[in-house]
Amino acid sequence: MAGAKLSSRQKMINLMYLIFIAMLALNMSKEVLSAFGLMNEKLTESNEAATNKNSAFFAGLEQQAIDQPAKYEPLKNQATQVRVLANNLNTYLTELKGKMTATVDDPSDYEIMDRGDYLDDNFFKGGKLKPEGQEFLDEIAKFKNGIVEVIGKDFPSIAEDVKKKFATDPVTNRDGNVLQWLDYHYKGFPLVASLTKMTQLQADIKTTESEVMSSMLQGKLTDEVSMSKYTTLLETSKSAYFNGEVFDGQIVLGRTDESTKPSRVELTLDGRKLKEDIDFVIEGGGVKLNVGSGRPGEHKIEGNLIFAQDGEELKVPVSQSFFTVPKPNAATISADKMNVVYRGVKNPMTISFAGISDNNVKANASGLTQIKGSKYVIDVTKVKGREVTINVSGTLPGGEKVNDRAKFRIKDLPRPTGTIRGENGLVKMQRNSLEISTIGAKFEDFDFELPLNVSGFKFKVPGQPTINVSGGKLNSRAKQALRKAKRGSAVQIFDIQAKAKGVSIILKKVSPVFIELTN
Image 1 (tube, one colour):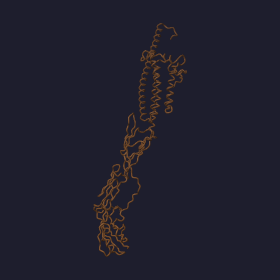
Image 2: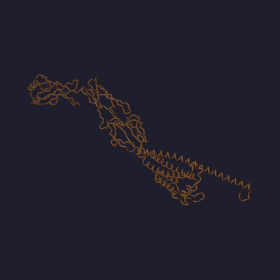
Image 3: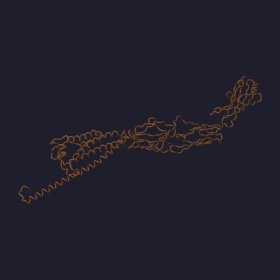
């Protein structure tokens, strides 16, 4: 266009064309500057939101460390180191950006930020870096190396990403020339472009901080839900089952993680408060009890396991029970047709239902009285007939009723046996011994201890009239008759009158005693 000789008109047209191109370039430059400015604003807004999000996350982690220090304190310490590194670099960049925008009259007018004099003069001198430029690189390296050191072992993928994002190695441009990283990114660029790059660098810092803390939480959650932290537990609707019932238990998972433990425990056993380190210990994510099984029957464990969560106490209610059965120490042996009770006495009895506590057992029959627990007595003196039936009912732990019954034959007290000096039947003794001996009566081979009191008897010496005697010893008339008896004579003591204390019925006739005199 400039090679040939042009007319004045053509020269004017060419000049106008050049002016038009320059105007287009000028307008394009302003649009690009404004675009960088708008991008910087958007990044700044995004960074503010990320800052608030990271702060809230860290505050939650701090509270978790307070609530469950064993589980979250190590994570909080690690997150604190990352947070300090991020804040240090972010603060440095914010101060540097403030110095950059201070060189223009209106920081919101991006179209005037077309020059890069500040960073060119501040970072570079000739072909070398100034101390300020080296400081910029050192701050980036300090953040990068610090993050890698803190999280490199636990989160290697994030550490590698940080190395790439914050690398400051030399860069080869499109012309094949190798430039220093600071020259390539910041030398000769408009102020608004460098400002936006630094805001993007701050965004990378916020993203790194968020990724680290999110990965920490995700790792902890993965560890918490790991099946290696669980064991199987058997959950039942009641503490004991009987033959014929449907077993409705279910197998559930329970945590055994040592860090999952309550901050406080409030438990009672049958209303009695349990004490830590005496009645229970907290271990393996559970509460291990160390209490006596107690008396036979059902026992209730109630209360709360208290966990700290978000600065508040969360109560997990406990309502469990276990059942104690008597320890077998004897076999049950019974003789058929030996279920017998006696008239005139209080027959002791033991009544119970296997597997049911005494307070849930009820028994009734004519003359039956409960003494304590499973101990009863039955008095069938007034029962007509020769049998009595004892009905027993029990309430199982689940509320179900069971019943049983037993029949007992009723017998009269056996016939008492007369005695002298405690001997019965035909007794050989001397005359003088008989004079001072006591006449008595007893039940032979009888299970009840029923002492008999003799109130009188009849005394007969062969060839002499029968003498009635009151009390249990020979009177004077009986002694006179005894002196007339010959050696070898058989003296009779009969019609003995005896009574048992507490027995209201009339006893059978007492068998007689025969004495053969030996002198």
